Amino acid sequence: QVRLVESGGGSVQAGGSLRLSCAASAYSASRWCLGWFRQSPGKEREGVAAISEGGNISHYGDSVKGRFTISQDSAKTMVYLQMNNLRPEDTAKYFCAAVGALVCWSSDWLDERRWNDWGLGTQVTVSQ
Image (cartoon, rainbow, N blue to C red; front, side, top):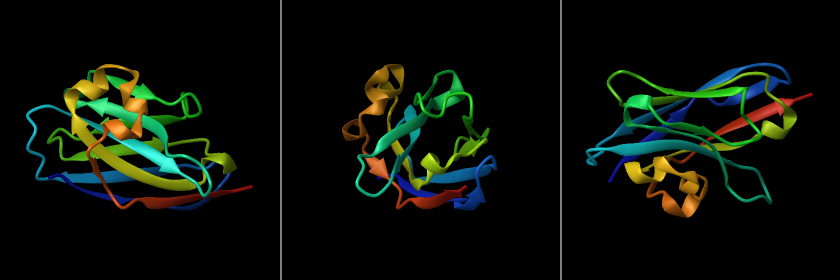
């Protein structure tokens, strides 16, 4: 089972930036898909971004395209979410998730039920 630990959340004013990090350990799959989801009170969990092993496939939710960037380190143990031009509607708890590679190959990545492993989340709050 993968252990995922998020960090980097915090409070920022609208227009500001934050970078979230996710440390993935004990991942046994030879190929994987790692992603970020977010959830605010009373709303469903929303797919934010996903990236495949090697970074050749990446996806973004419509609401964050052009503002957020997902990336990984060369050792493939860290996944980052660079969030620029943040808006109050980006306020949510952000979760890192992991699953086998196939999920990254289609729009299935948007379905949270497809993902196997989850971190505990990190809170992002954007004020006006």
